[in-house]
Amino acid sequence: MTAFVTMHLPARADVQAPDGSDVRLLPSTERGSLAHFSLPTGRTSIAVAHRTVEEIWYVLSGTGEMWRLLAEAEEVTPLQPGTAITIPVGARFQFRATGAEPLTAVAITMPPWPGMQEAYPVEGKWPASV
Image (cartoon, rainbow, N blue to C red):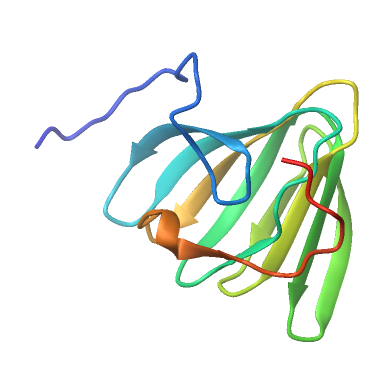
């Protein structure tokens, strides 16, 4: 195994996330993984929750909103370039792209993303459109 990994953002999505966004896979380690997410303008993701991973998102471009619900805590957060948010294990979340360009973000998943079975659909804040 090599000590370092260097990648460039793939030109096309590698997969579609369980929430319906396009995902470009970036490097991962034993403790976390990095991915680039994109949601077309005017679209709303499918609401999901994660079984075992937590995430930190950083918005790169576009504007939108992120809904999060965990126990009694609920909020809708405006998203714009430079916004960073956390998604704790078990939190329900949903996001939408409301601006003139796609909403894009990078996210760190800890531990690394284990596969599509990790996320499960939940009741969301808005009707999904992906």
